[in-house]
Image (cartoon, rainbow, N blue to C red; front, top):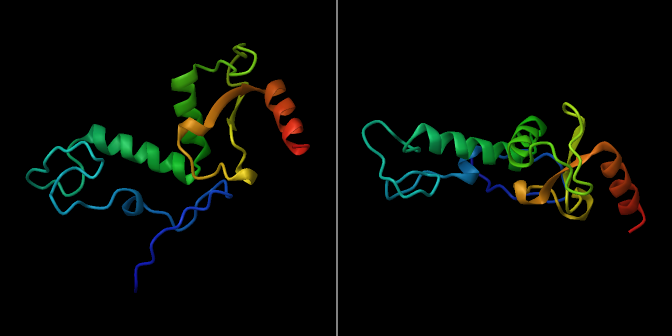
Length: 132
């Protein structure tokens, strides 16, 4: 079977045929695939530490479009505070919003293209985007 390079689809919410090796190929110089520069030792083949692997898996899941991973990462980053009105809705009453919408090329993105919005602010933003 011939390997076909992955081409990101910036107009899709979820990426198909996307695997960890597309994002983090094994390096010929035997250093960690995450780019930290740490040399691999012993039986290590891709990651220098569990922390490197965890960070890489999180980014992979975000780029792939995994909504659970995106919500957890946003909760850690924004603490549930709405980026528009500054309110913190109770519980998990907030939504993950693509700053650049997927239909305008905002898919296949890291957390830089996501923001936390309360439900009313997200609804208002979505309505405005429909007319722009």
